[in-house]
Picture 1 (cartoon, helix red, strand yellow):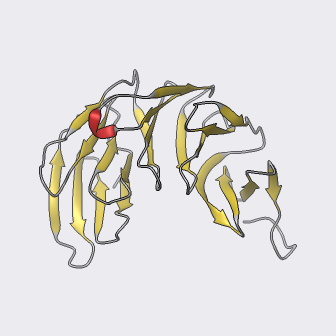
Picture 2 (cartoon, rainbow, N blue to C red):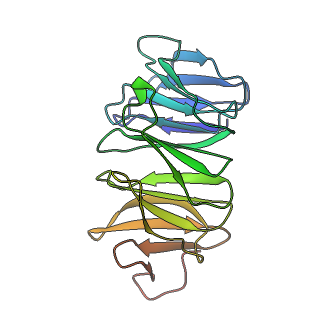
Length: 212
């Protein structure tokens, strides 16, 4: 299995395997709801839209695909503006904006993924972008990758608002903790948390050792 993603409603699970097939499963009964065959190379990432209707798959075949698994086994549209392997995908939980990243260091934003038009391209990484995460309100996008830096982007303008952070590794999550937007990164046996507003690393709350 190369990728896995639960739908926001929790009733469906999407998986992708080395056979390049995307499958959608009923989370309760474990029955196969759909088999989506279109990619011609490995599928490393999957993400659902906030309403759980559309599924976005990233492919090493230089494209991402948008699916409506409940209605068709064929992709609605191919997001094929990338010049290299698409390795990461994220969907804004608030606005439905899709971000796709490739091994050519570029991030593409799609405000209307079903329309197939890339809104803008974010450039700044010096190596392959491997991780993407939107803030809960959809206004910020965090990216990280093989260059071991974290970038924070303004989704509306495409401007870099924070970063690069040379102490970061790979962003693995973005969420809210104690009312603050927090990024989590890891590149080894320890994880680091960052307060985005303050631009500072957060220590463990109990003054104990690092998150290991």
